[in-house]
Image 1: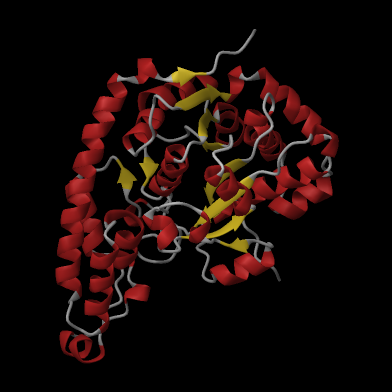
Image 2: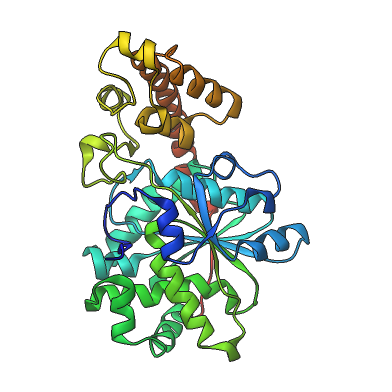
Length: 363
């Protein structure tokens, strides 16, 4: 039986190569992109669709866009969200027209959050958090789904191009709320092309691939519209601290949220799964297993951008020179520094929400 990639689930993918094969993805090639970021260099970004057209647009300085969405259903975000923003930041620096849509309609349809509350949460926290994590507010265009009538109208048009059974085959289920929110997401992904046809890249976790596949299927059925097929790059999940699931707010004891009290985070990190042996003597003799270590994975994905330093940590662990307790202490220090910096940038971003570029729509 095939794996079902579920945008609303929390299953940790164990074999990314099988996912690439099963869903017809390409292995991500960092050589196609100038000065790739650490996520790209380290194969945390592991797969892609139509990456070549984005690399070509960057090289030839042609118009392209990067887009992501915020679902303002919670009062905080989890640590894994940082990867989406980091990749958006990369494409923004390479000249992408950058769009952030606030999925208030999805929050209402799939999460039961009122439009008014979704808007408040987005303005009070979610958008400032994305700015704090690296987006340039002067170069990013924002809109709320509920304000964008073009997206709503196109969603109905696109819905005619997919059958109930096809939708269910992609998503596993087809309840009305998911169908409605998903069709709006298809329109969101293509929105920058409504007035200017150009390539676009959507940086996402692999669990969001159903949305990309559905959008590409619909584009191929509407060839007269001459939309570019949307490109996507996929990053691996940030695992939960116990290693069992992708990091999710549904398991607060194994999830790092932003913002979060540093002392609580330290306690969580001290309990996190490592690749250590049963005893210190055994680890000195056999070495550790950084491939199984959540602490090493957090440094690889989020906390340590120096490749040489990360490589040295890996080697020291493998040869038994670095003990898990020492490693955790250093990681805790890095995490505390990151959390303090995030809080500082968040406070600054909240003061600048009046400077955000919201797209103006006709009534």
